[in-house]
Amino acid sequence: MSKLMNAKEYEESLRKLKLNVYMFGKKVENVVDDPIIRPSMNAVAATYEFAHRPEYEDIMTVKSHLTGKKINRFTHIHQSVDDLVKKSKMGRLLGSLTACCFQRCVGMDAMNALSITTHAIDAKCGTEYNKRFLKFLAYVQENDLVCDGAMTDTKGDRSQPPHKQFDPDMFLHVVQERKDGIVVRGSKAHQTGAVNSHEIIVMPTITMREEDKDYAVAFAVPSDTAGITYIMGRQSCDTRKLEGMTFDRGNMYYGGHEALVVFEDVFVPWERVFMYKEFDFTTQLVESFSAYHRQSYACKVGVGDVLIGATQTVAEYNGSEKASHVKDKIVEMNHLNETLFCGCIACASQGHKEASGTYLVDVLLANVHKQNVTRFPYEIARLAQDIAGGLVVTCPSEADINSPVVGKWVKKYYQTKADVPTEYRMRILRLIENITMGTAAVGYLTESMHGAGSPQAQRIMIARLINMKSKQKVARYLCGIDKER
Amino acid sequence: MRDRQGKIKVGLKYCGGCQAGYDRVAMVDSIRERLAHEVEFVAADSEDAQMILIVTGCSTACAKLDKVSDVPIRYITSPEDAQRWMAQIELINTKKE
Figure 1 (cartoon, rainbow over the protein chains, first blue to last red):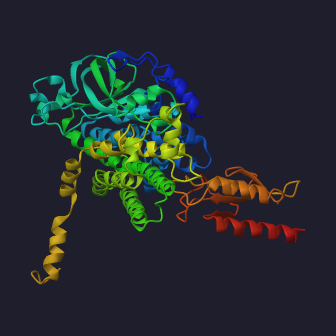
Figure 2 (figure 1 turned 90 degrees about the vertical axis):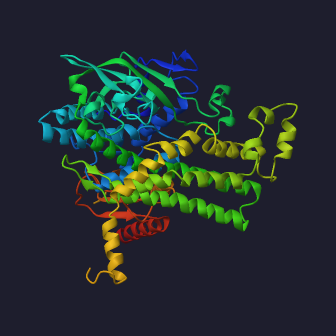
Figure 3 (figure 1 turned 120 degrees about the vertical axis):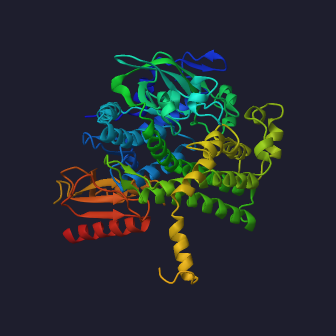
């Protein structure tokens, strides 16, 4: 029986890790209980908790194609279109239950991409990467682990390829080949959920050419491997979490985090190396990972669900919910949110089987979906702030409403209705603030812009994948330029 | 096909609930209460199940059983569906009496 961990067991598993984490210039001695990091741990823990709930298990769990055992879907290799669709649904579900990034999709996407590329390299080169990868996958499934999918290098001068950078470490690369493995150096930026992960899966970030073959490397290592250091990213309003459990944090339970992960001469045994200098397979790995990860932005639909719910609630508290323009704006928010859902369901529904047996989403539609994600959450957030009113940014603190001196005035002057306590209004405003400009805006807005590739990356893919000739052919026939179809 | 208390053993399965249009768990709780003398819920994969009830949050009804079942399967996709099913069970029970 594979181990389907619960939330408590997951938390305990993290306590066993010896991570080297820095935040605000100091080493974090207790990562799990750190008040700034803990909400992000709670969000990952939710992926374990909900897998045990009967009302969610049809989405959250699945049978392993390796063992036939029940596993968490986050460790699964998609075996059908239905699996792809349920992955999209899982993203929305978890986003709607946590209102933040739950950090576990990137590892799932890395594993699915590697299942395809390792198979392809083996078929051409006679290597045994797929065998190694499947052994790693079985370990991940058996122990129900969280994997960080580390693709984004810091990239240095964007006009130069890896081998021409002023500093060779701007892209992670091999610095030594040994009999028992390789040694790598470099870093990976924006690593979502890195310090909540058991394993780090590293992949190249761009298409490599022969001169860059030392940078064409993919592997997995335990997250507490010697030589790995995590430097936590700051988030807007992050230190509110140091103020205790006040409602000023907006989301009382969940959050996300990103980190810069530094690999300073890290040893990787051969059995954990999944690509080694096969530069001509970097495009496939990057594009399949990107397609899966662009699909994964289904989570933003779930966060949008919460933001829309919060906006309707504050409209009702304010007494503005019947105003025609408010109703219309709420409809617009839902229209945008459900349009996002259409995209992530569509790319999954049109998925196909790769030679490895893994199902891959429709790459064009995944890119179209992600392109929408770079825009729509911003408009949904704008409408939320429009309806919420200026108090979303001028609201006094929880300490003020509880003050023996000024609390009476905060309660009096910010109350809208006799049956709506001022505190309720302040709480829902704080949640809107959290999602649209606080810690959760990292995930809902800027991550929507740049995560899984910045907007231009999707436009390049859309331009490449659209069948323009067939569109022109029909147009020419229908207007009489061509006489035959 | 009833147990000693005369209850039908019903295997219960939920969909994943990604955008449920109603509270599926509360609905099942209400079924449990109303049919306390007629129905006993068991796991969907239980060999004791005499029928399977799949409670889905929308009409897509995407939930699937892990294995092929040779007992009747009934989907509930809305509160109205649940009302109809409960009425059927009560009717069957009345006829038995």
